[in-house]
Length: 411
Ligand SMILES: [Mg+2]
Image 1 (cartoon, rainbow, N blue to C red):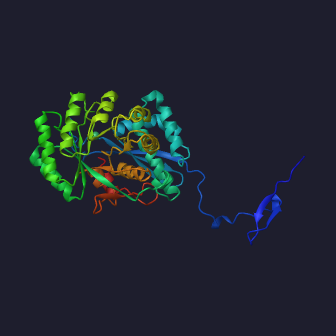
Image 2 (cartoon, protein in one colour):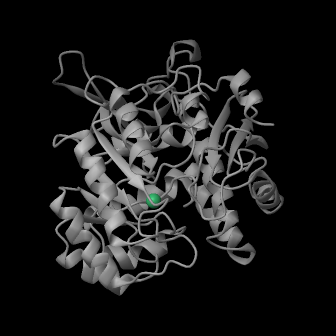
Image 3 (cartoon, rainbow, N blue to C red):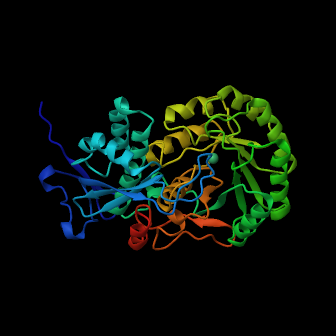
């Protein structure tokens, strides 16, 4: 028996309803009065810009050359005239090589589907160095796609990630240890710049002896006073790290006596059993994760509660699409996420948007000083009176590159 499909329409008094034939159903208003809609925005090109010439001190054992190319800006162009920007934590030749593999799965695709495209790129990269430089390249592309999406629908990325739980977040200054006289000056300058939380990393710490380590921590605490949160990064992902669980345990105990908040990477990245034991017994929070490049690497640490804080890097791990998954896994297991942010202003913007879109977030990392963070934008990030950064509110990442600065910092 055939049936006539009818449409139920409410009357003006809100009570009676009428059944009308499909042909008589209400027509949509003229296109000019509808909200602007975007069905597809096709990717037309993916471009790279190296950052070099002002690379900050790394503290790495093999030294730092300002011309080192550690970061690459990634631009995704579309047929709608919208261009998104991302940042990859690797050299431009490596991103360009990855793009030889990735361009065929990107060009002509709908740029408004970053999550699908990210997963497609990661699976495409399976035979080409999964979790390696190709994933670092995917990270920059993914962030650029989220920027395109936000600009296309005129919403900040944090809203598109699910919603903004906060409008600002404390930034912690990330700087390197130095001998006490220099360390005191660095800390004083950092306080002067308004930071209320400061992380000090490697560069001698854990590389000489225990007395030197404690001298550095005592110097830091005496300089900043009792009210400032101090964080310590041992940097054990550096090659040939000599220490194991007992060093980590004794160091955590020493740091606790100076009221240090967290100890980062006190063990080589893959020592999950060492991290599990340390996290269970330490009085300071234990953090790690900057050396993991795939969500599958984070899961065993999260599920075993082998850390208090995981530190995925949005510019390495597959971008916002991948780190959002890591972050929600961590949240569901009572592990805090603080993204690794030794990167660029574009990376900071991505970190801020993710932090805004998580139910619990306490800090974002802010490397200082760094021209790639301080000089790259027309409106640089600035701390408020409480040492917090505002989550950008503009469409996409809510940032604009300073093209003169980009030109100056790209060769
Ligand atoms: Mg670190």
